[in-house]
Length: 87
Image (cartoon, rainbow, N blue to C red; front, side, top):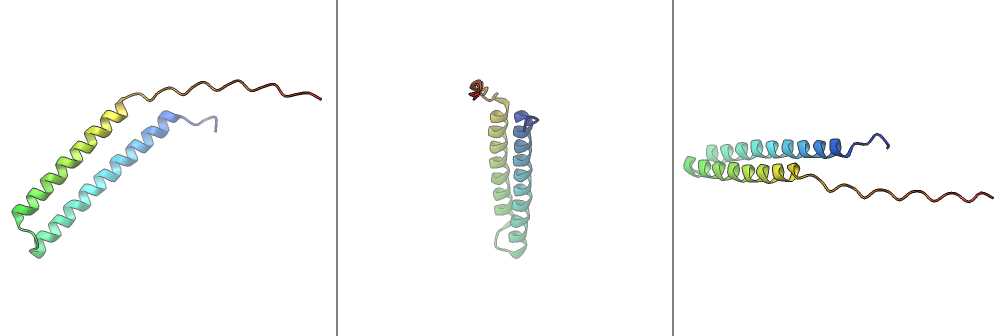
């Protein structure tokens, strides 16, 4: 456990979040396209819905980027271990 790098762990979580966000956008686009094909949405409604989805994703990316840019508070130093009683 001594080799654990907190910065690397945070980076991996951040990248996983971006990947999940990208997947969500792709699936959202597919759903909108399917609804347009079925005639449940007009093309104009589909475009508006897709634009709104992209805007929300951009907002989340911006917020996530700001969060990732702010440095985390340094951890408090660990208290030194008490000497063991010798019997």
